[in-house]
Length: 246
Image (cartoon, rainbow, N blue to C red):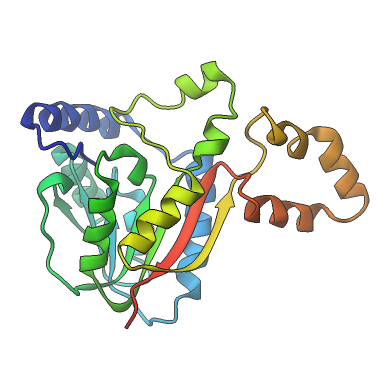
């Protein structure tokens, strides 16, 4: 993951940051587990047998490794240290060190591109989606997750401010994400949110309240209410399945 400004000093600083970050990471947390379940569910809906998959911003490589169980998979990442360690740990998939700010990928090479919590760490988000578009074959799919701007800003300030220490945090709204995807000619097949119960400001204070959710459970409407909350955009993360037309 990289700063798109093209400043070599910024890139070097970020390489150093992510080298340290991924070297310290031992296990994926609960939120990553829940997001990966959503990603795999969407992957399962794609009617391409053994898709060739590319993960943009693969980090320590754990998700790339899982995706590699379903088709030939490559992960690209800014951190050389992360790539070196992931290549040793997950030998059944491929990894490449890539600076997305200066990456011109080959066209029409993959069936699925996965962008998992990467978009928000980029200055030039449009370029990121253009790269995904270029890599995909006609009829291919982009699976993308990114923090939900409105939910993040409904968190308590101290929690939001300590959510991450990554160099860039550029959260987007649902409307902005739609605009970015459509400007790259992606067709949005599905869009929702995931991971409920976060945010205690405004309307989120109501829909996330213990009492409202208890009432819904007592009425037997809790699963439908959860589905509606995700569709209405109350989840912690935005989730999109988008297609490159044939």
